[in-house]
Amino acid sequence: RADIEAFAEIRVEFLTLIRTIDDPASFYRDTVGYLAAHIDGDDLVIYLALDQGRIVSTCMACLFQTAPLPSCASGRAAELLNVYTLADYRRMGLAETLIRMLLEELQQRGVEKVLLDYTDDGLPLYEKLGFTRLPYEMQLKLPKRAAEETSC
Image 1 (tube, rainbow, N blue to C red):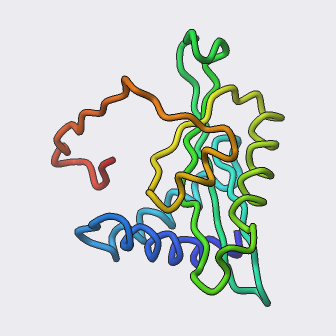
Image 2: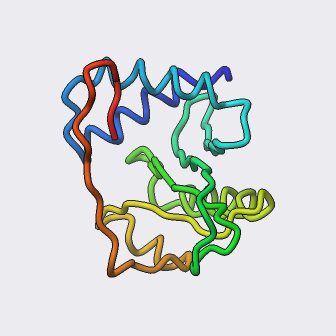
């Protein structure tokens, strides 16, 4: 709980490096709200590496339940997000260590399938950890309704 705002800041920093965020301040507020609402639940796992109290590497997973699938009989799945290490701390194995810890916890929680979006920089690490690319995956972004404040 004490690291929610600092984690949200580093999340916005990371995402603005790889994506366009139209309103970073609003995205930050939405992230803080999400984290505050889910940090004590069973649908969010976050691992942080700290150096003298400063977050230097992160990863998180959002857990969800679907109907049983051939690739995930229990329907218990997770999306891996925000694997990020500050530039001065890269190539030290921090992200790999955090992901391995997170995957172990996900397995203990009954998760059978982990999904992620990757960058070219992250691809070798994810392949090293056993992730494979999916050939038949697509997405559709639905228009935001006027009453909604956030979108995917």
